[in-house]
Image (cartoon, rainbow, N blue to C red; front, side, top):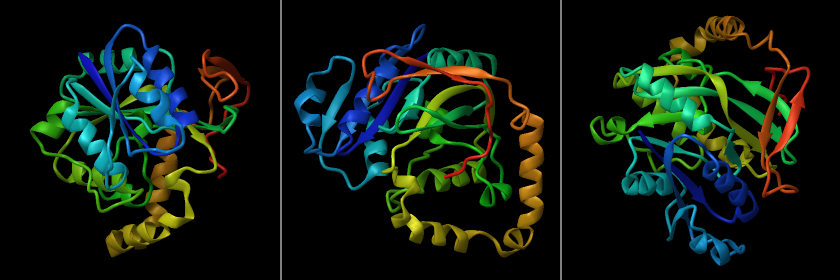
Length: 276
């Protein structure tokens, strides 16, 4: 089982270095890392084309989702994923995904748990994957692309691609369409990834407010009316997953201060609450 990891990049050189390192040190799997850089002028081009750990393509694109589609078109792996520059894989992540897919041949998309950190790598919270379904996902979105892995057949046979009209919420609409088309999701109940709140995350930027408003408009009226019920159901699922009764754990990641070696962070009191 070969993995193809695609990273869309634009003026994120210092974060991209950490992302690349986290893919390169995955053990026990075959993986290629495709970086689609949109002609960054922040020093990325000085090192990226010469890094033997990646397949670098420097070309203008029409946005993040166009870059991801281009990367998927170039991918040669059996399992596809995309990892943004401000995200990383934890040690053993891809091996655990390979084992999960081998044990669950009927699952098309594997969604795993992830850790949220601040820009320095310090712990913020834990997030747990919940199998998405319509209509509940219109109210609470239980997966994240940094810890989502897709069998190639979903792209090649089902024809699932990211809608390039969106700037930041294309992954949400991709998952909604996947649910509508019968793509089968499964949960890998372990942390595979890290999402860093850098202060410049596209998905957390107020500039995408118009896309969030469009998302709300697309939500069926009866779902909006029943939102308290769906929120209650979501919280119950989180409780069952153990989100509110987590045990102490540790994670290892690359940081701006330690770009060559992973740093281990101890978490004595985990939390599932994301206070942005």
